[in-house]
Image 1 (cartoon, rainbow, N blue to C red):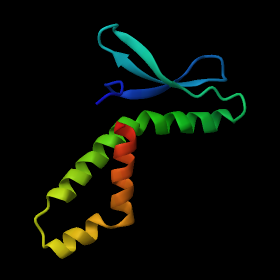
Image 2: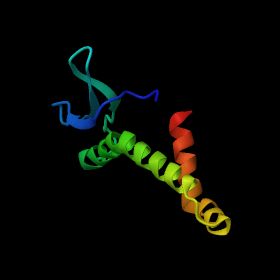
Image 3: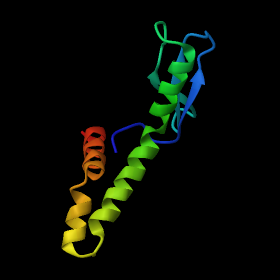
Length: 102
């Protein structure tokens, strides 16, 4: 994976105008900024929600990847398997994984 490893979390920067997504860098032994949702034009509550969504991205990617791998490996009959793989949600999962990894 190319993205910053570790658990991502949100924090306010102390100004009341900025919410950041940070991750612990094991080499530096401190948090590094992964994303910054400076919210001069949106309410702080919306910026916090955006930051929480961004912070959850690595875990969602891992869950989606695991789900697609699991569904792709099932040995149920081909008709059922093809039906699952052709669903809109399955394709959205695959697209989201591809978007995150490219």
